[in-house]
Amino acid sequence: MSTASLALARFKVLDLTRVRAGPTCVRQLADWGADVIKVELPEALDQGEPMGGPRHGPDFQNLHRNKRSLTLNLKDPAGIAILKRLALKADVLVENFRPDVKQRLGIDYATLGTLNPRLIYASISGFGQDGPYADRPGFDQIAQGMGGLMSITGESGRGPMRVGIPIADLCAGIFAAQGVLVALLERETSGKGQWVQSSLLQAQIFMLDFQAARWLMAGEVPPQAGNNHPTSIPTGVFRTRDGHINIAAAGHAIWQRLTTVLGAEEWLADPRFATSAARSQNRDLLQVEIDARTEQEDSATWIERLNAAGVPCGPINRIDQTFAEPQVEHLKIARDLSGVRYVGQPVTLSRTPSAIVDPPPDRGQHTDQILGELGFSAAEIAEVRARQIV
Image (cartoon, rainbow, N blue to C red; front, side):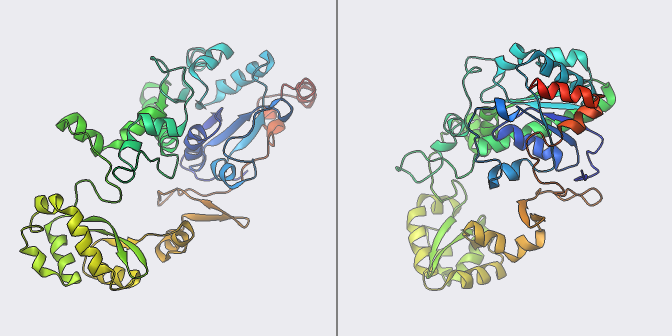
């Protein structure tokens, strides 16, 4: 197996996660070179329907690249014993069981942290490891709703709206990976591991950012604003002759540039639009006035003119159009491996870049190799296979 990066190549990670938030966390570590062992049930014992689509579908494939796979029956004491042997040599373990499951299996942080005091143990849950909702099953859309995002997404009066990606799942995973990296850095001075916790609910609330601050600091409950920016006006979607574009005219200087490009300098002296407060009060009227101008030319023309004048703007792409953008191609975020394209990391390191070097493993593809690294003989591997422990 190749190494995706030298950055984390010295770390061994046990991946006990399923679905999305947990695999997202571990993908962050795998893509930067960590030796990730994905622990899965033997196929004969896994009766569950895969969430996120089939193993060889795009979703699963994009989540699980750069990993090795070990099958292990954690319902059997012998399987738990193997996991504990792995944990003795691991730097990180990531799991997203419901909080009570790991205690029942005897693989909770208190147990494994005692065996290996240097272990970083990361837990991702729906609502936290304790508290009144700890035992509830977590799901992205539930967290989007409970965490306030759906109340500010969509057009006013049209009802709550989820966003088009599982943002609570993804952010919980990314934040958990960040927590793991912080814990690994701290371990360099203390020599000790610790328990890292993240949840979909916490991640979603954190991602509210300034909208949450509007409530916490100013007592203001943000409403739905559709495509309009809630505080920077005019910022939103505007009609053109052949579709729509985004324009973001934040601040007076950019507002002046926009009026010049639109041939509407008279708006600068118009009391309805002259100040930020006035534009906020008359935002619907301003939308109509801008649309009347932008509808006279096609999207490409406006994008060229506005960018040349220093007014932030851009197309509203379908996903296929996004990957065809010259700048996207230049950034090389679509990574090719053996004719299959993956979504690469959005961060570039000059000396230790991330690469996609191995496709997602087949279930149990590396079982014999990993057991051999633990010291199992060929006869012992055959025995645990026969007993369906692996």
